[in-house]
Length: 238
Ligand SMILES: O=c1ccn([C@@H]2O[C@H](COP(=O)(O)O)[C@@H](O)[C@H]2O)c(=O)[nH]1
Image 1 (cartoon, helix red, strand yellow):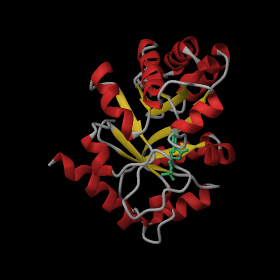
Image 2: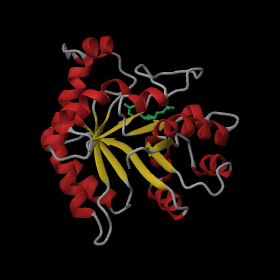
Image 3: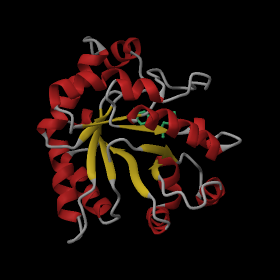
């Protein structure tokens, strides 16, 4: 799970996914299926991608009462994804329930999917958080608070931006996952993202895993763009 580059498959349907994946031929990828694709295609998209040998992050960001999240996670566990998530704003009890559901639903012999909590979306700025969520502490403090809550609930990590990863690892340890979207090359359009960093900077701040979507999926040369991201991200290991 650590040091992965996850591609966000934000496509409308299976056909668009197959067209995109044609460029990748024999590459075994770590792919993120989010709401857009899952709500159209349902569990069959997960089965298809797993059959092709890819790892899956099912990014549905569950946020509901504990009982509902527990039951939903029990069902999702059967899809045998590698990673799933909830919103930390759902609270400590909800996060504990999510894990209980996952454990109950994991088929014997399979590994329980890792479960992480979204802290503050990478499309949220500090100004917006204060104005719209009425959270008056600095954004980093809010992210750290949610991360501590997720760790207390025994989750495996959080979704955060690159800018909070160092503090999270300092207080919660290096094995607690920090999964960072909002990743762009210097020349890329940031679109709706607010807390954006390059792969090199993410690595230097100790991010565990990066998520890249449109910079790759909307590129005219997706494989080349993916390899550029991969080199920038992995280059830092050597
Ligand atoms: O805080 C968050 C949580 C999830 N995401 C998801 O990651 C990708 C990022 O896509 P880009 O095209 O690279 O911006 C997308 O699927 C989001 O739903 C996030 O961006 N921030």
